[in-house]
Image (cartoon, rainbow, N blue to C red; front, side):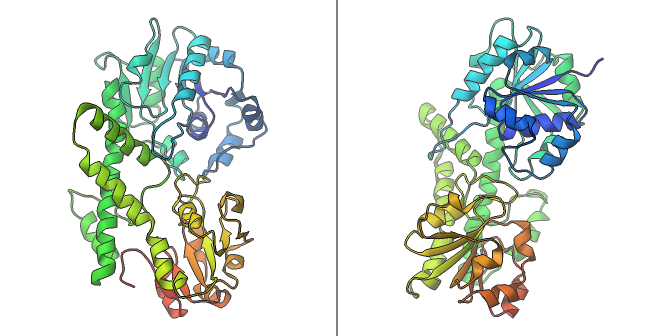
Length: 423
């Protein structure tokens, strides 16, 4: 069988990474976006997102990748993924307009025998409502994790495929593409697949909520959460890969969207979502840990303090600031002088007129009364606490994710504060 030609419609984060990964697997890929300027930038090698390995793989697979703003080019594809990012509002509600627009464009441009797959995350019931007579439509659960998107696209744990009739075999071209990734394929009805993605994220949120709740308790009773985590991971009912690292609540938009979706359906059908709403409250409480700690340690004691903040992205290895704890903190620091540095996100993203965009980590520390490490970028972990202490005016360091070397920070005379440990 000749390898199928794979298409991706929507060249934002999900579609771009998925298309590049498909080319790395040896498939010819047509990457379509209706935005002419975005498609032209991609032709020039200018990528709209930052992900480890992505630039290198685009350069490596130039001969297999075609970027275009012409929907008619999709006629050459055997399998076409509709894959734009789905934006959410501040309440976690999805805007599915672009998904609908691109799906209509794909149906209009594709061959009748082409397999069309919705890859963007949609709520239960969405895919069945988009079936068309004479068209082959599937839903596939996306595996995107910001900062690990390429890794996840190249080596998926499994493929969850939503089908009109899961008892029927998948079309050969689609089957061939999935098999090339060497992972289990789980066909199920549309609604089950759509809810499977939400179910996965609910389990992650539950683990995060447990970690944050008990880590905060550790901060008050003298226990150390990092000592407890290994015991949990050795319990087979919990496991080695559990989300047990404490953090500053849920961020990024995807988990928030799923919480909102579950609450919406619970309200519609009269089911109980009390635990989900409790997770939301827990997340918002934990997000403000840095602000509460800053107030206790600095803002209530120092006149017109200077605050250094390292990290603006909501997590490491991404440019996204969606629901970033750092940005949320900086919104509360508008009355104060702030010095910020992030290796990817520009200081212009900060909603603070008194914000100074530093040229480096140590430049941000110069003359500051306190340092807050708000994104766990790997490069921050290599910083020398002695040099940090020399550049700071004060001695307080907030490091919620424990990025810096704790022992070295104490040895440098820093007042080091992190999640899950009593200060």
